[in-house]
Length: 277
Image (cartoon, rainbow, N blue to C red):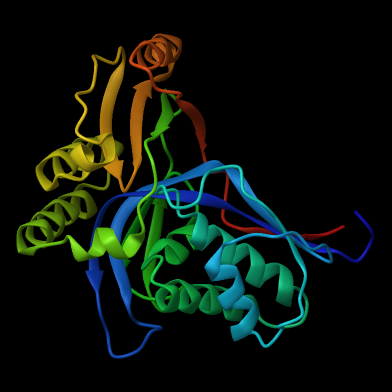
């Protein structure tokens, strides 16, 4: 990688509960919710061209007026499943493109606008701006407009995920009904009030089951018994398992016997980063 190349990376984000909120402006539109910021991180670097089909990156480039920009994108997790790859891509691309030239806040705003305009997400850019452990989005909007907080994940907890396919965000949003929205608000209020890992784990699983999101992520399959399971929830086509770290190998074995290929994720070490190479 030659000197003068700007790079940025971002964690991924897997929402467990969310409540869409439409406002008068795109900057204020978004969602409140909770989820996990996880790694491995997605990376975008300038100065190298590679074909990709991530619409939010193309939108970021256009919004910044840099139509001829070349970017190298490394995506360790699959787009379209529920890992917020579109948001991580948009944030990383915007940060790499404007690094040292424009305010960081402009990068986050551009990424948020790209997500809204492309219909790929509502609150993931705000979540990534905090980017550590359990992320609580308490008011909607772009970073600097919405309110977000993070709570460290206990060191005794491991994160596993299973991908079961792809689902566009617009399809997920079109399926929401009044019951979904009422349950989301009720359980978010409880998590925000209690502000503990235990409440996040309990209400995330409860909401995921009651809303049908877990069933949809599983494709209708029944889960096996998972040793050491603390909680499970689904987002689009990703199933997330929180398990006791000292039972991790047993949990992986059970999922493999079930026919899954579990991914071992780590709680994110921090928000997006920028560096020069």
